[in-house]
Image (tube, rainbow, N blue to C red; front, side):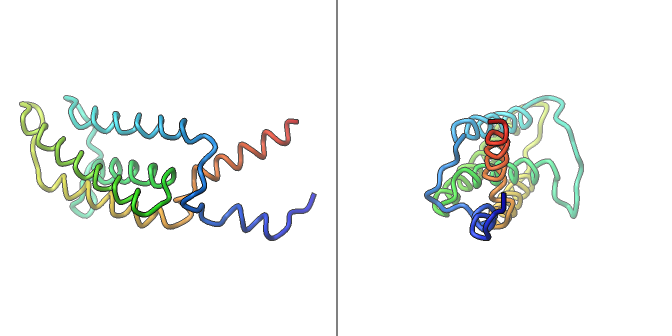
Length: 149
């Protein structure tokens, strides 16, 4: 069976702000699980330390970048993405203050900055093909389900 160019283009074109993912509830549940993981890792005693790159803490950059990229795939509208970015930024600030209240973690303004850099990088990456990763997974699953019939 041959595919037309329109079908191929539709599969790689960015998802519009109105298109919902088929498994949106599942993706949201995973996303909120990731949020809980970041909260846990921010407050646990022995959090992994992946080190620094260019004076940026990799753990902070990756954690907040991942959250932003994940939710940007579910919510394509720019205003919604910005609200998530603001919420994650606030979450990072609050968690940093909570860390300062513990006797086993430290407070650092630089960690807040690293979180923000991760969020910003993810907002940019969400404009690329990476912003359609979940839609691509769903398309692949759909193709597999059609082949099994």
